[in-house]
Image (cartoon, rainbow, N blue to C red; front, side, top):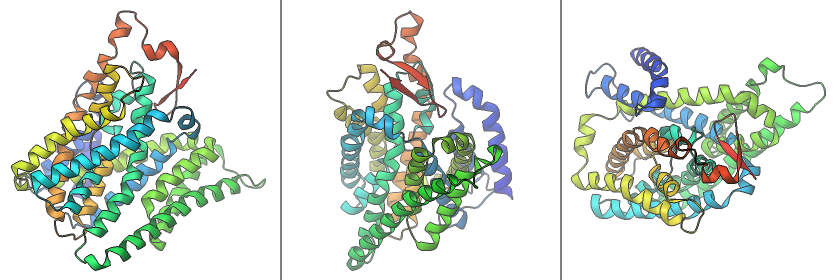
Length: 415
C-alpha cells in the first residue's frame, strides 16, 4: 500500500502543478520519475522494487497496451493520405538512420556485441511527444510541425516493436533456437494484427444492429470493453497485445468516429494514469548503483543519442521539404526517448539474453537523461514560434492553411 500512497501523492502534486508545468520547464512526467527514484531503495527505501518484481511486468504491460490503443486512435487515415510525405520521411528514413547510428555508437563505445547493440538502437528509436506536450499542444507552433511529431511518435512505437522482439530472440542464449523463436514471434505478431483488425470490425457491426446500441452516457465504455476483450484474448492465445492494441485503436477510429470522440476523454485519462504508474515504477529502478554501473563510454553514447544521433537523422530525412530552419531544428531536437522505450527496455532486462543488464543500464540512463532534457526545453522552444505573432507577422504555415483544432490537441491543415 505504500506504493499506492506514493502514487496518490505524486498524482495530486502533478495535478496541482500541471498549470505551472504548462507554462514553465517543469514536467509532470518528470515528477513521477523523480518520485519513484526518491522512495526506492536507492534513497528513502520506502518501497522495494527490483526488475524481476511482478509489478514491473504487469504495470509495463498494461500501460503500453493502453498507450498504444489510444495512440492508434490518433491515426487519421484521411489526414495521412493528404499529408503523408513528411511523416513518411521521418519514419522511413530518419528512424532507421537513428537505429543504425545508435547501434554503431553502442558497439564501439560500450562494447556490446552487434546483436545487442542493434537491440539497443531499436529500443531507443521510438519517440514520444508526452515529454514535449508544449510543442504539439500550442497553436503558435505550425500545424505541419505538430502533425509531423504526432504522426511520427504515434506510429514508430508499433514499427519498432517487431524489430525489438526479433532481436531479443536473436540475442538469446540458445542461438540454435533463434530461427524457431523468430517464427514464433512472427506468428504472434500476425495473430495480434488479425485480432486488432477483426475485433473492432465485429464490434462496429454489432452496433449497427437495430435492436442494439449504446446509451449516450455508456458510449465511452464501448471502446473500453473492446480493449479489455482484446487484451484478454491476446494473453489467452499468446498473440502480441501491443500490435493488436495499436491496430485496434486505428481501425476503431476509422470505422466508428463517434466511438472515438466519445471515448477520447476517458481514454486519454486512462492512458495518462497508466503512463504515470509505469514512470513511477521505472523511477524506482533508477538507483545510484544503476548510474554507477554505466561506464564512461556509455555516458558518451547517451549524450550522442540525445544531441547528435536523433537531430542528425531527422535533419537528413527532412532535406528537400518545405519546413523552414526553425521547424527543422525543433523537430530534430524533440526526439525524446519516450514511454515505449521504457517498456521495451524492461522487456530487454527480463529477456535473459547474455548482455541484458548492460543493455538495460544504457537504455535506462538514456531515457532518464532524455526526459530531463526534453521535458525542460519544450516550453522555451514553443515560445520561439510566438515571435511572429508578437510582431504581427503571420506564420508562414498559417498564411497557407486554415487550421481547426481537434479534440486530441492535434491541428490538421485544410487548404
